[in-house]
Image (cartoon, rainbow, N blue to C red):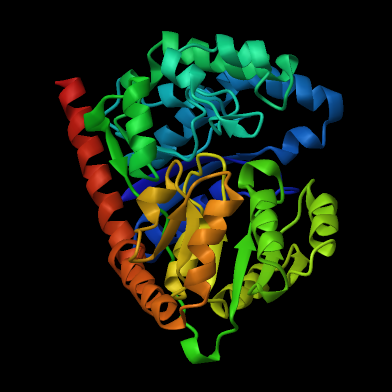
Amino acid sequence: MKILLVHNFYGSTAPSGENTAFISEAGLLRNRGHSIVEFTRRSDELLHQGFYGTVKGALGTVWNPFSLHKLKSVLRTFKPEIVHVHNTFPILSPSVMYATSGLNIPTVMTLHNYRIGCSAATALRNDEPCTLCLDKKSVLPALRYGCYRDSRVATLPVSMMIALHNAKNTWKKNVDAFITLTEFQRKKMIQFGIPEVSLFVKPHFYEDPPKPFPWQQRESKAVFIGRLYAAKGIHILIDSWKRWGRNASKLEIIGDGPMRSELMKAAAASEAPISFLGNLSHAETMKRLSSAKLLILPSLCFEGFPMVVQEAYAYGVPVAASNIGSLPHLIVENRTGTLFVPGSAESLLKSVQPLLAHDELLRLLGAQANEEFELKYTAGRNYEILMNVYASAAEHRGAKLN
């Protein structure tokens, strides 16, 4: 099959799960014999242009006729059987959705976030979940609160993009199938107005999964992996370990962010064994994760699909997570981990403390987490789902043209 993949890479200065997912999926398709062409742009192009790049990006975010023209040219040359769009923000713009108008070429779009209805893309405001714009199908709340980068000026072009393409009915008319990462996200998109028949759930995957590290050789420790800022609930995790005190299990914090200094001071004021390791290479991060007995995700926000969950499952590491957003759809209580009340250090501690003291139960949860990985998150299973989505998109496009 000839497949055209479309993606706007985010800036290289910040790690991006979306970029990683795009690269992995392109590899998945190539490894299975498909002919792939990538139509991509990079946000670094704007960053290197200073103020001019900022203005150019703002204008192009709403509608970029040059991206549309170039994509049409690629379509004429490559003649793909399907177009799969990942991210269009900020350079490509949703104008690229119109490249296949009137053509018998199905278009699929992966919704890595909530940007088709949420200016912040994260359904998050002031580090708390917010779905006002999605619920009201309006960008006015985003403009009122300056949701994108905490700035009304920066929010304006993003909101204009959302308002324009909702008014033009871009998503319903020009996309034949949407991929969401979780069932939670799928339900939010149905509430937003995307037709249920057009929505499919396809999580991330692990192409070459490792073998789980022998349980008896693991350290009696828990790990947190992620950006150190309030929405990740990292301060709640530190607070719970402070309450536990000197007898707490070892906790490793992997990642960096604006709260690091504050969190390190709080940890130093306690006797709890907490280590801050900063940003590590992916290989070193996976080494730390594979030797752990528990991964903790104390998020206060609606996560998309944290890749670290599938990585933990691949390594046979159970997960303790906040009972919020997509996480209860990914962590199965008493099978692959446990859930606790988001924002509650007391609830987190009550869930995690007895678990870390019960090694045999943890081992069982880890084994079941690995079974869950084999069932849902392998490359083979992911490819099967993706091919079914492409077939449904083709059927939908054919119905449109008849």
